[in-house]
Length: 145
Image (tube, rainbow, N blue to C red; front, side):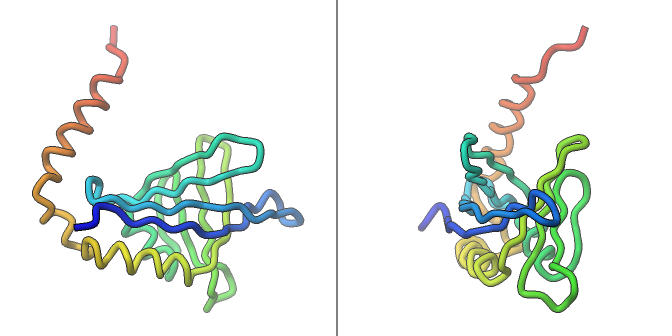
C-alpha cells in the first residue's frame, strides 16, 4: 500500500492588491498522519516553509469559506469561482495565496483513494503515531517554574 500522496502546484503569492507572483507549492499527504495535509511554500530567496492543517479544511474550503485560527480557506469572490484563497496567519502577520481549485481537487481525490475521508481512524498504527507525536511535543515544552 502506498504511504503518501504528493503533488506540486503553482500558487499566486498575494503580496498586495497590486503585486503577486507565482510560486511552487508542494502538497503532501501521509498515512502516518491521516487527518493532515502539508503545504510547503517555496518562496524565492527564503527557506521552504511548511504548514500542516486539516485535510477536511482544504476539502471544505475550496467550496465554502471556512477555518478558524491560523488557517482560512475560501473560494475566490465572486462565486462561483475556479480559484481558492488560502490565508495563513501568525500573530499579526499573514500571507495570502490564490490557487486554482482543479489541481487541489485532483490532489484531494488522490488522498481519498489512499484513505477515504472519514476513514482515517481505521489506520491500525494511528494511535501509536499519535502517542509518539504527543510524547515529542510534551518533551519539547519548557518546564514551568
